[in-house]
Amino acid sequence: RVCVMNAGRNEAIRTVESLFESPDTLSSSLLSGCKNYSRAEAIGDRRVRAIDWNAELECAAPVSSDIRYIGVRAHYVRMAGERPGANTISCRVVRVTRDVFHTIVSLAPVGTQQENDFSRIRMETSHACAEKLRRGDTISVEIKPNDVMLLKK
Image (cartoon, rainbow, N blue to C red):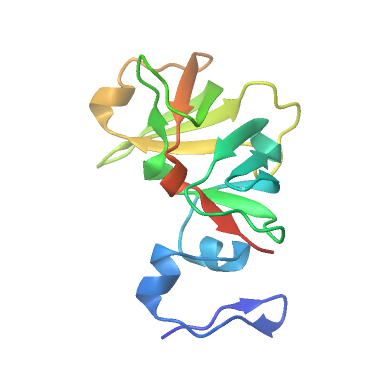
């Protein structure tokens, strides 16, 4: 069992599995190893505006008014196919780093003006998928609605 401290206050005690499967605050998501965040605001029952990514995203879960961030694990960000899905974001490749088991691609969503802690998107993909990517390329990535984590402050 684990309890996350958030701004000097205890969050609910939960199992480690629950923390990793469905973190519900920015602090618990950071602790669980999630790499991608954006400030967010609800724009519908199952839609959010990802402020730092200049994108609107469909969510599998209902969006409550107290949602302040969204999180997406790096291995859930995928290059969009020929027929992009609901949550497609056009990005510029900032860096491509080959790791032992996968390639890490740092992306800047097109239309974002500033660099801040949440403005970059990290995609972890296979070496084969990333082999032709170069810095400066523009690609589209997609995130499935059930991979968007809705996070409170």
